[in-house]
Image (tube, rainbow, N blue to C red; front, side, top):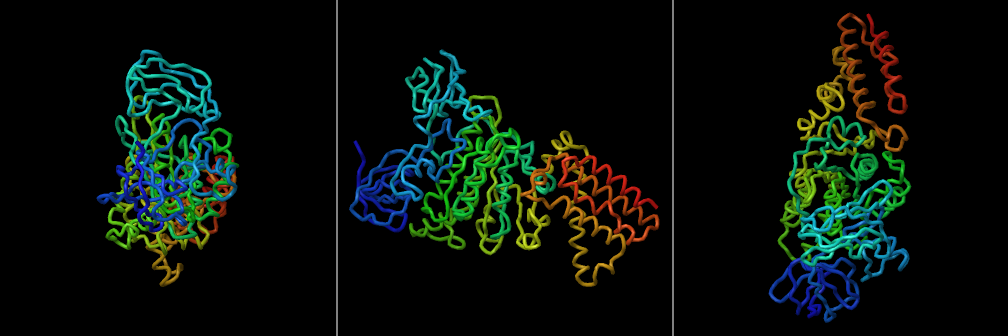
Length: 575
């Protein structure tokens, strides 16, 4: 029997209905246009629904239908390369249906129901399957194997299974309990997909950005926050991470971003080449676009849709990186809906449950052993935060810092000085440095950790000296401290600055980052021992080799150049 009721009251995206008996988070169809909404509160016989679309023009007395199902996403082959809105409607399909402006109440399946896939069954008849077991494979995009999983909540013996060409809704097999296996299954977005066990994060997510990899590394399965004021370079940093990080799959959620920024992503990404395979980067990317002029409620859903898709690929044994740009807009959507519900406001008007919601979202990251398979997978989450006026003490930034272990603080002053990525090295931190030390020692160099420590201590020393310099000028400093300032300048300009739009400098391998640190450290030692041997400061600062170190960033054959500069330095600084 269909559960139907009527609209009683409307306040923006929040609609109150009477006459239906839903459960929390059930999806309802609201009004004559059947707008999609979700139950967020039940008070006696009144049901409060947040609608994912614009509610203008609907009126009390119109019909409300309860579907009896929570908000779910379709998980199966065909997601990679797709561009979705916040509730997994494919935007290119909607454009074909109605042009550039999306009308209300339209529906389109998240996966193309017509497209046929070559399915190869790997499970055999009579085999025991548990939830999350791999039953077969499909080549989703060239070089990317999509492992078809049994839904996490199903188990039993396989009664029948067959290989061949199938669409996502076709039945490919059956369990002995009568459950039909298809290439896709649905999963509620608010519930984290279950795993066998969580593992310690022990390997870094290599980003190709020197400041992240060297000074503030993020572990695979870890969580990082990039807070920064407007114009400090959050979106470019996120896009560089999406392009270059060594995750197998990228999920990029543009949550409440400006339309023109999202347009840039949507037009740029399809044209980018994947540095690993030479094929288009979109082959391993899912984009979720929810711009600031789209309905508020869908903004909240877009974050959950993104993390559910990320968990699905993690369950296949892939390492996934999720970029959420930006969680502040998500929090603002929560605040708007909370005020429409007339809830008691917390700090700065945000709902009292802001920290809990942020923690629930970030806790879905991690390095895990998925259900039904021994392969490990991981979801690393990188969340951008846009604090109003660049004030990091506001609630969203503070609540995010409580649950993240890496803090990449963007600084407007550095951006104005054209120092990009404009990460402030004095306020940023990573709590993974110790955990990842064995990995770097084994895979890059034994002295990686000590070099990183040396770079950080020089930068901290520089900060102290600059306060004195502002009072008395740099010439009043002792010579050794003036050498420290020279070394710090090299660290800033050669190691920390990176050009995201240069074909060579956009990505820097770990070996190159290490060699750059080693060269700067070598110069520091030579300069200090030259001072001890009686060389004058102006001779040390006039060395040509140190000024040429910056060239290393823009050449392919950097090892040859570094060797040449090293011997030139030794000649120039020999007493």
